[in-house]
Each structure stands twice: as structure tokens, then as C-alpha cells.
Length: 177
Image 1 (tube, helix red, strand yellow):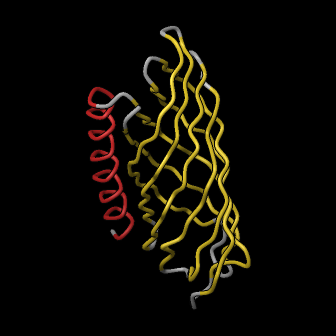
Image 2 (cartoon, helix red, strand yellow; image 1 turned 120 degrees about the vertical axis):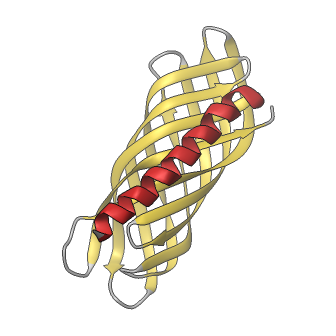
């Protein structure tokens, strides 16, 4: 029952972010929206007591980068790393990671972000500040923006320390040229 509630909360957060992404793509000259999956490492590892952690994440984003007049869409490779000052099995953050996603199937795009995250149990909420660039059939552009996202955190270990995990979720943002 508890897992069903977590998934319900995650679906509600994903729906809210998807609505933000849909509106932001039309309201601002720069926008990003993506569904993201991947995995990462945590060192020295999450235990019951909080402790400073180094974190990394690598994955795939499927979405759109708009940097007017340029735009790209498709699959992007992502890589992020940073720290969590007091991560435990129950909670994490506020922590910070930096990194980028780049690629594209139609056109090409890059988003370079600073991500602040907070995790409570299996739910991770992020705030992003990003620089975007995109080249596509309509031209090239760049800009900056901010946004949010929500993810489901799935540890790979059943008992502590948790040293690896998987994430699945969505993120979206918008900004000015």
C-alpha cells in the first residue's frame, strides 16, 4: 500500500511538471522538457545516519530543447555529479549536482545545468538552472532558464550501505533568450 501511495505522488508530480513543460514551450523563447532515466553511484553510501555523500548520475533524456530560433528533439545523453551534505536512507539534500545533456535526433541541442535536489524516501524533487543551445531546421539559438522536476529513486541494494541507484522521472524549464 505504501508503494502505491509513493507512485501516486510521483504520478501527480510528473503530471504537474508535464503541464509546466507544455505551457513553457509556448510561453518562452527557451524551454526544455524531458523524460529521464538512468543510474548513479553514491559514496561512501547511504546508511540510517546522515553523512556527506558524493553522487553521480548518467542516463538518457527523451525530449525537446528549444533555444529560439533553434530547436532539437529526440534522445540526449546526460551526465551529472555533485554532493549531498547529509544523505541518509530516509532523506537526502538539499544537495547539488552539475552536468549536461546533449544530443538530439532532429537537430542537436545541449543543456548545461546546476541542479538542487531534495529526496524524501523514494521521491526526489529537483530545481534546475540551465543554459541551453539548439541547432535545428529553423536555425540556432541559446539562452538561460530555470525549472523543476520529479523522480522516483530506486536503490540497488536492499540493505545499507546503498551505493548505487536508479532514477526515472521528468524535468522541464523555461527562460529568456
